[in-house]
Length: 515
Image (cartoon, rainbow, N blue to C red; front, side):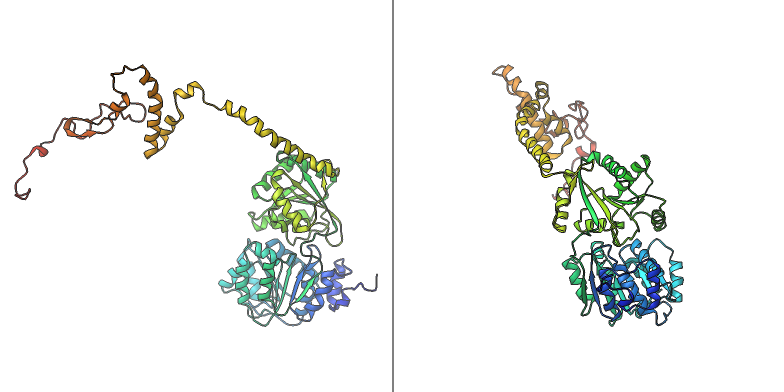
């Protein structure tokens, strides 16, 4: 061990916590833990930013356990509050408290959706030292009058950038307004966008900024690979990579929930032990899926970005991006599920020609290109990269030459000219367009008749447009008009026809006429 390498005991943690951490298998702190824990123990507000998978959760759970070990919680009045964006992340934070607080008597409650309110309320009634919650469920309990936040001494906002992406910031601002003004606030995130920095300035007071890596960098412990393929071949390429890599456990990320189901069924049909995880599943089903995966009962998890933040799955060997993420920052979080705690991992991203915009955004964010390989795992050189572009250019140049042939093939035939397209459209259209289409059809169809007709014969088009008077003195504007279905309407009775009612023929009294 080098002279500069510190231990958890050197950070100022109590013997009980150091013993619990050592029992969990950790000997030395990570850089974010080494820098953040002493400031948290001092009671300072902390703005922490580090790569995913570097131990941010322990950097606030360990000192919080030490701070809260003295004191006792009151009913419905938690002493600390941790807000997490997803149920899975909140559940994982609670597992950390259970593991590291094994030698203490701290009580804890987990408030997440999909779980019975009664069980959560019973824990709140007994009083809890640590309250871990998602924003929506916490506000539900507050509005029911089941929890009071006026005794919170420590507030933790975990994965703050994810809060912003998921639209939780208004809820978080409301929760913060319910807390005491004098408190300690810890603000942690894997990325630190300008919007997050502005929000942090509202919540924190003279914070100590702790950054151990560039906010948009990927972990060096993850080997990244890019595979170009045709959209219809993506599932075949994925299965080949899984078989070739001898994958022990992997997360497979899709952008859309419907694609998760399709890919999951495909993998199961081909003999892979796979499960699925996404936001539309019930909470018990989501927890059961994670339990199977952590217990090695399932080797693959086809998931959405609900699994991209905060999940710490020990020994995860691979991450597959079946779809290039539409949000470039999600790429960092996705591949950060592997290569954690000093271990190595591999990440594969499948990309098609439709992903060029998203892929370019990822390259700009991480400030480097992802090494490209072919479907067989062989590195793709610069000449191979340019080959598809040359082929595309050749195809683009060939398109204008083929255009005249297409124009000749699509010209109307003689049969089509006999029955113009405008006549067909006139029956489906309405108003002026219908009559206009009909007039156009009549003009096209009347041309041959004019040539064959004698010179002293009046044109047919004019006589058809002449108004006629029917019986009863009613003027019919268009006697040649036909009903739908092709029936002749010339015999249709207009108005009263030749039958005039008697009341119409009765003389009008002079008084009624004003005489």
